[in-house]
Image 1 (cartoon, rainbow, N blue to C red):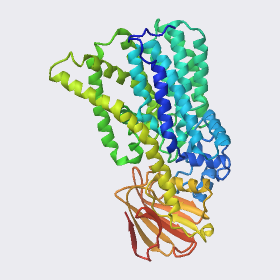
Image 2: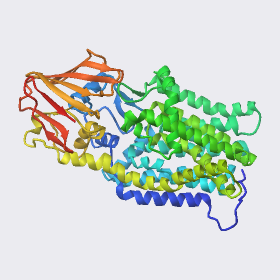
Image 3: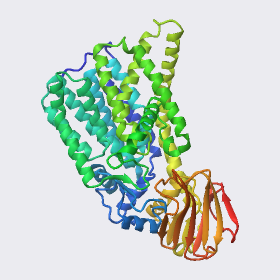
Image 4: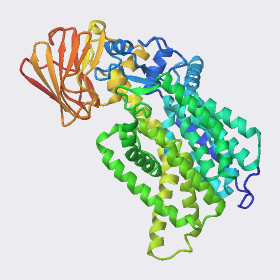
Length: 575
């Protein structure tokens, strides 16, 4: 297939080479801030053979929990999982290729995060290379250059410095080669492209279910951009449709997915819930993509979700207006490419709407999104001196703001993300564990009860951090809550403590009033709940609260401090 003829004067840098250089520069700058965080601690603990979940191996590292009540019970009793995870809590994903590559990194780099990050950068370079190859075959070079710059420097990709998210870029990179091969076969008659694309798609599905989002681009191409009659398009889609169907059947047969407090909505198991929540989540993702990121607020600040939806509606509506304003001015070939890439961007976000929404969910949709954004900016820049009147001035000001987001703020966000993530997800956790007011002499025989944690990093990942870095471990680790609300504790008997979340709840909607969770040495009874989870819980221990083997702690004054339980009939309030 012939590349699109160059439409600029000689001397301009090759757009793919320029994008690769930018990606390398971004990667090199972020290397000093490489760090492990969150799920990395869990996966590395398995590879280091210090994790209590001995049933997980190097090819299924993305199985945080397999949903077996016996295994979940073992993890809860150890303190690796909190009491409010469901007894069949599951986070089990089919990602053998990504898991094996993590295990290979561990062989070569041990616990040095820099090697893992370099590996991730190489996959991103492959993604940029494949994307550039595709764009050069369907768009003018000047537009290709701008789209690749918008994509490569985006702050959305800052999340990829988190090693556990690497499965997305691996799947996207391999699948992007498949899309490029498919387009070369359909538009240029390159016959090897048909078989290479199928091989790439099949391989990408072993890296991550995110590959489904990439396959949607192929379907969008056949629906809105491919040559030939409808019958030819359907025939071209048939092989990959069969591959995806087999994948989904196997996914359901082996019960991969997430449930029981994971924050995921499995469309195969909860189709109605998925469809009900789809519109809001899709608008939030599209709005975050157009705004340059910040989708992580969905998880970090749940109370802001209505604001995120409103902001998403605003950004989508404004961008639709801008696209309409330039649509009549673009060429037929550009319009055809924009049509299928826009459809692909929108539809590829759908598989991510069932996950805890974050910037990692934007990487695949932004492949098409970056092209449409570049198209608007490209024609605004070309036409900016030819238009007059308040309407065009308003459009021009809006385009300038869009350019500021994606060409100025984007690289700032991209370079700041590794530092900020390291600070929030590693340094803060390391400091809180180092400064925790623990009884080091007796910790091995104590049950540490963390009344409140400031966030999920300290609340959930502290156990795995201590385990991975061989810090002294207690006999058991109990985290009662990491909800961002004021907590009130009232002692109702010598061995019982009631906890009330003021103006909030623990995010566990499957719990109802009266539900009981029995752990070794502790029973939790839900006394009150709303639609999102428990609001009042009673904790009864197998010994008096004043027993020295029970060691109470809470987050206070920026530290985990030792807390004396309240006297009988008295209360303790923790902000």
